[in-house]
Length: 220
Image 1: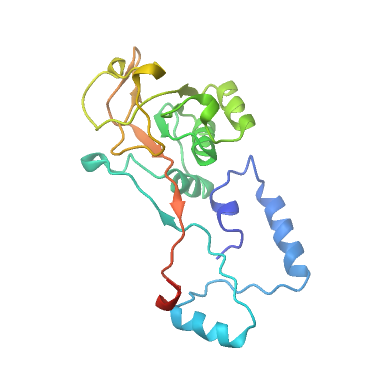
Image 2: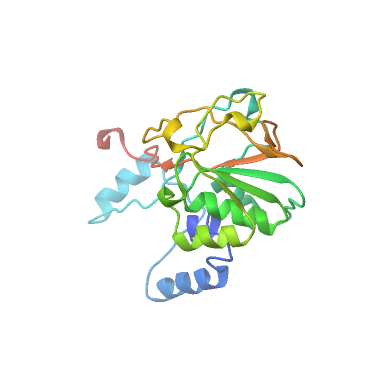
């Protein structure tokens, strides 16, 4: 396996060039850190480490994905943003003239959107709140707009259905919001005249959480 974690698999090369990441990892290894890859750490192994070392630091990152319920729409046209970024990193992906919808307003959403745009897609981002409330880095948002990515603000979550997007208001005083979005989420795709509820390719940017699968039960 390659070292680097999400910095390698989830951050596009235009933001973090792989040679820069490789150089930083090499610097760490050159200063006495030993790395062993391709080794699955089981609970029993972890317990042994606690007896062998003075401290054990678990830095596995946020491995557990929090998906969204898209019902029958969850086919091969729907892909988690972080998985999409990893797949495109491996190469061989073309989205020329495809319509791509990205659901979310964080850095992963914009990374997925800008990557899809670089692969030739027509990209639209939908977010339940305003542009100013998007948690993504400001520069990422501004550069996405400059690259031709469309931002749809104040788009509420709705069940997947066959209806025209004109029924979805963008007036904040008519859209009730909660801190966390409800699911399932509507899927958009572009047509010549409007955005309609048909499936093309969708990248929901869902939050991820820690996985405690390796940790002993006594640590829960």
